[in-house]
Length: 593
Ligand code: GCB
Image 1 (cartoon, rainbow, N blue to C red):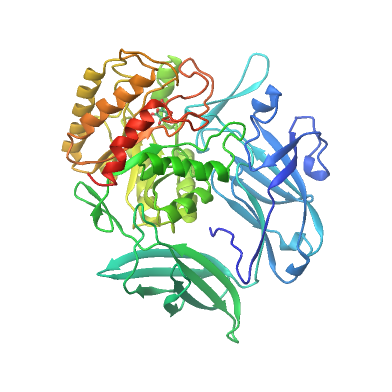
Image 2 (cartoon, rainbow, N blue to C red):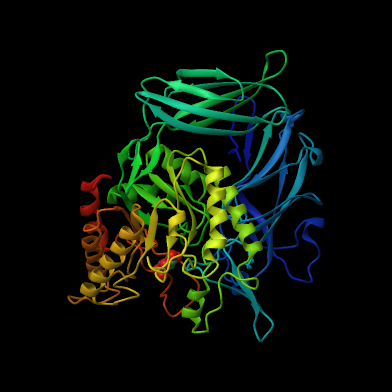
């Protein structure tokens, strides 16, 4: 799905701002049949949960409504008018006046509706968006809704971040011509000093297609005609980690008279990605990942996208020597992906498939374990939702040079019966949709090299490990020994590149001790050092992603103190002591080891 852009033939109106807001009560009239009867207003983009003081809104399970009026620019006569929602977490229903024009499940990927037939250039319409935050066994991420003794519906889930909901990203109105570009795919390669750019363009009707590649100064460096082909860029400037360079593919669609009827411009970077033996190569050179698992999470806004935090977070990553991050545990806003493209930050792009693990449930609740993969738990329908999440992620992010690998799940129960049957078709699907990028999943603590059933299906082993925190708590000597043994087991059995995609210790800033005392700033530092010593002894080791970049909000639980405190930065982005030590380790590495 193309990101809406303003070009010579397309116009773009941003609909962010303050919208009317209401929580759907069972007794309420259908809100789209008129103006919302409410005193509340909510900003877009933002999660709504932390905005209001009423806990009934924060804990609400079900639909909420956003509404505003929108005027269609009067110059749009003859154009298609499209409404695009960057994210409605987790299900969205869009009404233009009283008409339902779009419905979409999946809270972290965009959707749109052609509303031309329902609006008038120069006219105004009432835009209502319903957003539902319910998680079930057929949503990504999954969850369960229970009813408490007093009749309240409650949402439970197996992932460790707060179930923020609402319109957390932008909403757009845009115009495009009747005959237009529907999709663009760019795959780059390298032939000596020449960059190759395989492109393919889809239009909504047969038309002549012309493409031009422009360099960063806007100079044309290659051109071709036809919906598919290969451009060659001599003396190409590569997109490199830490040193981004972007070209632009300008696509023109021409009518029978040779008139340009649509123009679309897609930025791209020329780079290659390859797994060879136990190495991860970018442009043929071994790459060592330093960085974080992150979250879209800030005070008040929840998961609402915010450009100021975007810029600041990337500044902090650069300061600390992070060359990469994983979009744990869902696709991030497109603004984040584009920023990574422009600044040479490498991304492991993850779906929202987190919590496919009922062994974790048993551990947390102390209940007897249920089978994760079964007709009654995660089944074919779950997998269909998971497949759809993979399709939408790749459709949205396939052209980002920053994205070097797809991560199709976080901590599934990969050691349980049924895991292989569940995952094999999903790995195949991912490879079919994108044969150019390696595929991985992040393995949970309970999955070892001995009992894991799916690791051989993937290209890179991403392992989440918490020795010294959940295991061998406070005993870093034992933790280091366990970790090394564990990693060696995977490395020797599979012969694939291996990275630790999560390791971390909850840390309360300001808590100190001269002993190895969990929760202190000194312990977080010593914990990281113990992990690093073990990493440095493994040959096939290609990277380290600390959990987490910053403290973040979670659901209530006795393991969490005001949220998850494994951040290297606080939720306000202040460094904990370990930040300075990481900086000393990472900056000199510079992506190599
Ligand atoms: C994990 C999960 C992550 C949690 C983290 C923790 O393994 O992947 O979502 O937040 O552990 O802190 O427990």
